[in-house]
Image 1: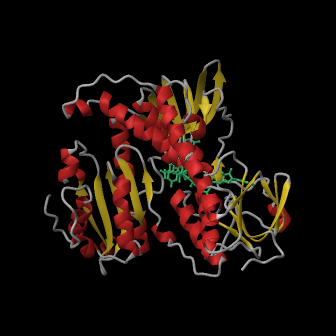
Image 2: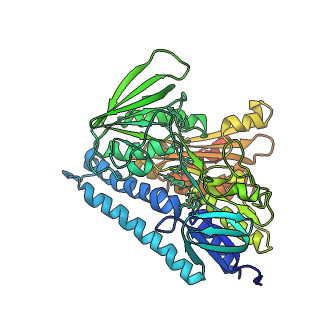
Image 3: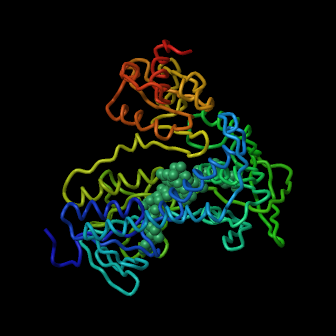
Length: 472
Ligand code: FAD
Ligand code: NAI
């Protein structure tokens, strides 16, 4: 199958969840494959400084929080917790080492060659990787994304005063007062970690609600929940600058719509205002490939760029910047390179915020569904069920949240599912699968769900679409 004019059938640039999965899939399909990675370890943002280390800190801090906020006491466990932050960081690093090492093992097992170094295109089939030059019939760009900088704000992860998400995972001390710039996914997840460990956390968000992109009901509830947990929310406010003096930072804020400036002091500032695609130094100009206004590489339905033999996937292309989206694109792209038919349903990419409780959703928001129906609210049916009425959540002392199912009134087909629950991230997979199979709310309502589980709230929300839930 290999074309002997090239060193490889496929060279993947980047070993994040998009790249490493594409490389393994390509090798499984019999293609001679290499993967270029400039980091010391494989796994990209996700395994090294993203999904995995943040979940390690979220999971560990959740236990600490349960011990300090009275939840354990309520369940008959009297403890006086003492934080060992060094050990918490050590178990995070262990998780990262184990998983990044696992990718190295999988590369060896599948005979994927790891080319160490920064990759730059010389032409569409020739890529310089460090001191090496590699030729490949197909090149898949999976270079991912990096933190979006904020004008007038200098991030210095070493000093641990103004940090990005990578720095916020590594703080050696619990800051007394942390200001989070951006009430999106990173701000709320990492803000939650440090609040649970003892920081006073203030979230400054440009928009009037947290979590852009989620259903409005979920966004409003999120504000109530985080406030109740003790976070201070400064919505409709933008940060215009941060000055560091000694060990303190002073932020300058003003209302998003303009108005009087004010200042805010902090021991630590987390900049989390989004991420941007990695294309700098990739040599795209050498192959005549331009990025769009958002800095992304445009692709067609099959992940082809406009340059023959060059493909792109993951955070560097349009769409949500999520690891599972990158992984699915990696598999589908490799299948297309191998001449098979690889497809990703971009309408059904679930999103999860791994706070307490978790916030999750898939498909359309209520607002999007109504817009899709020409603005006619009557064409959309909604069923909602509170977690308070779910026996398992109630028993577990997890009363917050709800499940909301949005269906098309005429056909009953489910258009979107939203959930706030301790295990919403796990629950959302069943909704995604049901929607993938074109389920109606009735299909979900008449599917037997094990009792007692949080997932029964999905069944009840589906029954509520018909106006007939049992437990409310
Ligand atoms: P990346 O994972 O960014 O990998 C790209 C790799 O390419 C990097 O290792 C980079 O070093 C390498 N590279 C770049 N340019 C070159 C070059 N020219 N030559 C060689 N190598 C190069 N998503 C979720 O779905 N769930 C989560 O819980 C989650 N949590 C997150 C938490 C944080 C703190 C952050 C920052 C992100 C999180 N994400 C999460 C997002 C997720 O990490 C990304 O969507 C995902 O990693 C994108 O995968 P990718 O393969 O496109 O790119
Ligand atoms: P985000 O896009 O989720 O949120 C950024 C927030 O910052 C927005 O609400 C925006 O309005 C606000 N903002 C922008 N400029 C501002 C300013 N000057 N002052 C105040 N607020 C401002 O971006 P975030 O949290 O940095 O995450 C980046 C990406 O990483 C996300 O796209 C997400 O997909 C991914 N990620 C996913 C996770 C998950 O799936 N659980 C976890 C962490 C990250």
